[in-house]
Length: 254
Image (cartoon, rainbow, N blue to C red; front, side, top):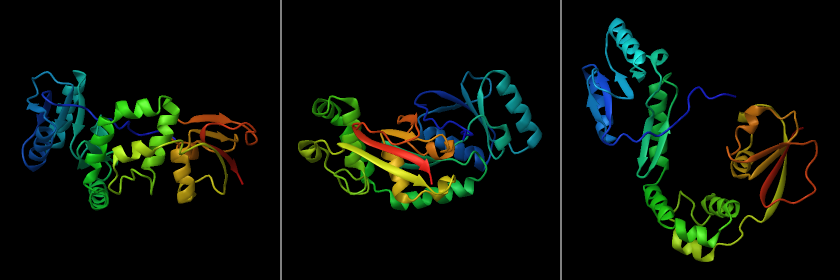
C-alpha cells in the first residue's frame, strides 16, 4: 500500500513563504504561517513554498502554473488536484505536534478528528516530551544498546507503563527503576482476514511494538505496513526456533 503523500514537519522560522490571495482563506493561511514563524511574501520573492488562496479558478490555476515553473511547491486552497503539499489540521502540545491530513479531500473530516484528539490528549504531553529530551544522555548511559533502549522506552510509554502518555509520568523515577522490561518474547498471530481493519486492538498494538516481524509469504503488505517502519521483516514458513531480543511476531494467514 502506497502513501498518497509523505507527511513531514518543516521548520519555517524566519523563512519566506509566498502567499497569494485576499479574503478569509488567505487571512487564515497568513495566521498559520505567522504562528510557524514564517514570513509571508509576494509572488516575486524567492521561496521554496507557496500558498495560493485565490478565489477565481482561472487566476488560481495560472498562479500555480507560474510558481511550479519556478520549482516552487504549491498549496492551492480548496483545490487538492493542484496541490504539491497540503496543510493538516493540528493538535499542538508543544513540542508535540499531531497533524491530521486527508490529502485535501475533506478539511471538515480533518477538523472533526482534531477536535476529538484535542479532548483526548493531555496537556502534559509536551512536558513529557521535554523531559525525555532532557534525559537523553542519562537514558543512553543506562541503556547503551540502541535496540534495548528502544524496547525500554517503548515499554515505558505503552498503555499502563511508567510513562504512559495519557497519564502523568516521571521520567527520573522511571529511569531509576527501569530494567529489561522487554526480555525475549515470541508471539504468533493467525490472521483471519487480509483487511487491516479486522485486526484486533491487541494485534494492532503488538504490530506497533514489535522489534521484528516474521511472516509467511501470504501475509499482505497492507497488514505488514501496520508494523513499525524500523521493524525487521523476514519471510519464513514457520516460527523461529532461536530466541531474539525484544518482541518478535510471527504472522500467518489462518
